Structure formats: C-alpha cells, structure tokens
Image 1: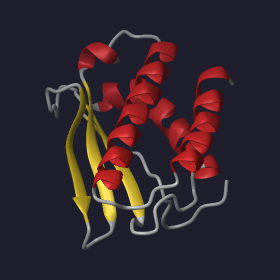
Image 2: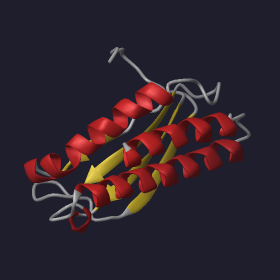
Image 3: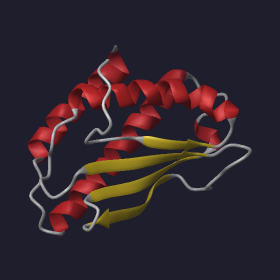
Length: 144
C-alpha cells in the first residue's frame, strides 16, 4: 500500500493495554487501510482532516465511556474529531466478528455526528460521496 503523510479520514486510537491492542489492533489496522483506500478524498473544502479517535479501555488506561463523546471542530486548524469509547466488555473474550461490527458501527455513528456538526456550521459537505465511499469500506471490512 502506498504510504503518505496525511490522509483525509483517519481513525486514530489509544489502546488501554497490550491485551486490548492484541484483540482490537489488527481489526483497526485493516479498517484504517480501507479508509485510506476508499475515503481519501476531500468531502468538505473547509476541513483538512476528519479524525475520530478510538479509546479502548484496558488495565493501564481507561476512559470509562461507550459510544461517541467530545465532538470538537477546529476552524483555525481545519479539522473535526470525536472520541469513540470501547469498554473492555466489547473486546475482552469477544470474537473478531463482533469487534469488527462494533468498530464499523461506531465509526459510522462518529461520521454521522461529525457531518451533522459540519452542516450545522453551514459547511458544504459532499454527503453522497462520503456515504458511497464509506459503504465500500464497510462492505470490504465486514464481508471480505
């Protein structure tokens, strides 16, 4: 895969311990590669990066929330981000299919909330483009 310094939609993460990394990390890496492959185009001219951040609870670090919180839009630095919480109960002893479903569902929710915020701020968003491209990511991630 071609590597470059910045992509348009990123999905960064903080993983709470080595066990969380082992359980969630490989699925997250695959999801990020699909985002880079299918969603690396500009969907909003006023924004340089759409950057949800996954916070996976573990023994060393934990955030103790589930779902999406702390939506932040930086007009000055031209990015939008949101925290996506994944409690231990969603990965510990859970099969890979359920982890993948959790990741894609929460990423989709995060993107929906960010698009809604951008529209509220009167930013022009190519919603059709983002959802068409995201559907490709979702299909590859869940069914291949």
